[in-house]
Amino acid sequence: MAIWNLGSINIDQTYRLDSLPKPGETLASRNHSFGLGGKGANQSVAAAMAGAVTHHLGAMGTGDDWVLDSLASKGVDTTHIARLPDEATGHAIIMVDRDAENAIIIHPGANRAIDEAALTETLAGFSDRDILLIQNETNGQVAAAKAARAQGARVIYSAAPFDLDAVRDVLPHVSILAMNEGEAAQLFASLSGDMTVQGLLITRGSQGAEYHDLTDNQTYEQASFKVTPVDTTGAGDTFAGYFAAGLDAGLAIPGALRRASAAAALQVTREGAGDAIPTSSEVDAFLADQS
Ligand code: RIB
Image 1 (tube, rainbow, N blue to C red):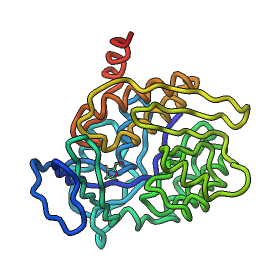
Image 2 (cartoon, rainbow, N blue to C red):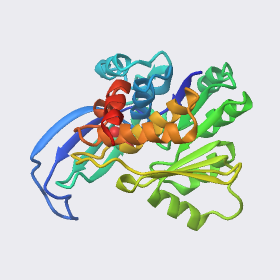
Image 3 (cartoon, helix red, strand yellow):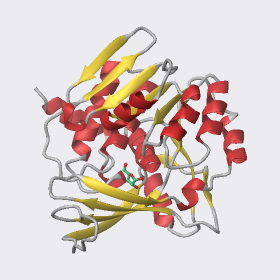
């Protein structure tokens, strides 16, 4: 019915380098660009591009209006993004090497100053057919997830950037847990007891993705599409947003995985994060070209 995303909004400053710097090293970048980012904003853009009615829940500083314009131009409802006079808009310093791998520093700013009472109030109007997305770059995940589950809605949690304490706190209120392979390994090594979620989505980059339905013990695998990546920043967010939109549209898991995988494959062939996310028709055309 609709996707609500409690998520970070960042201005990404991206520097392209031959290799990532080692401790103590100073390197000159080959290219610099800036654009829309943040795991949350990227997921909102992906869900909206995929065709879902998408409301972003978050916060920014009082400047940087182009960020809101950019989200809105991609179809994201920005009504519930607060403007906080005493906080900077979140930003990220991203270094991308010649193999398209990255290293990222984030400054959370307004992303970690979200008013939880206002959030809970908004989510009290949730429908049981809505989906809440959350990640680890904001505050308020537990309150939001509890409020959404209280209305019978599904909660999809991307446990990134990985933080074991955050995962432990949020997990009891989550329907689907999404992680990359490295995050999954860290989690399974440190969690004891049964996994209470209904589904587990694990992405493995160029090695594909899999979804474990823990309600009936079925596993669905999706191979990755072969492309030449130029920048992998935001690929996981693109996957998560498209996957959620697929579920929202009533696709079965294999269909949602396939579209999400195609969207992420296309996204890594372009530079940037939120600005590199493909439209639904671009994903259709890409899938039509696959044998
Ligand atoms: O997942 C990619 C994102 O992580 C970037 O857009 C950056 O802003 C950080 O949040």
